[in-house]
Amino acid sequence: FSYRWLAWVAAALALTLPGRPSGTLPRDAGLLLLIGVINVVATALAQGYVRVLRQRPALLVLDLIAGATVLWLSESRPLPFLPYALAALVLPALAFGWRGAALSAAAFSALDLFGLAVLNPGQGAGLGAAALVARSLTPFAFAGGWVALSRLVRRSGAAGRAGRPASANAQLAQR
Image 1 (cartoon, one colour):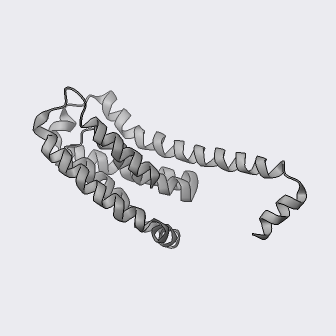
Image 2 (tube, helix red, strand yellow):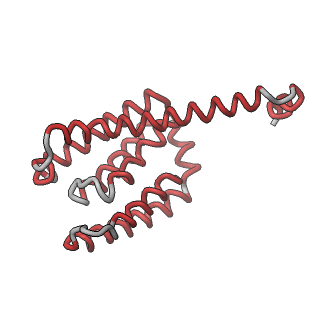
Image 3 (cartoon, one colour):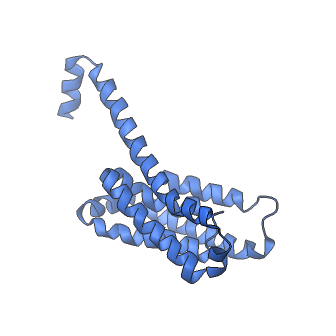
């Protein structure tokens, strides 16, 4: 949930960027506040959620829908809430590897394109083909990056354990 908080702060900062439309500020600020409250609750329940998720991975669909809903409510604009919405892809990538990353990215991309086509067609119509392709591939790159980062951390941890004396490795194994 650290990424969610980081993305929330980034969204708050993006709301203060010069040139942002002031007409959407009340809606975006309200959405930011709602997301902050959800973050507090989600952070408090994180350990139990991960435990339940490992038993019932289908529950990830709810997180993906929640992430897409944040985009839909912000008229499917990439800033300020796309980085936050992509947080729904972190846990599947970390918990289930490449398969979880690919499945969740495909579902997120489909939900995002649905929002652009049906719920916010004005925003979708303003995007060219290259922008739509980039928007469709962004979830795959994001989730893949988390899988790669997870593997890198595991490898560096394994390399660190391999450099320890055998007695230290035995002590760690007993814990």
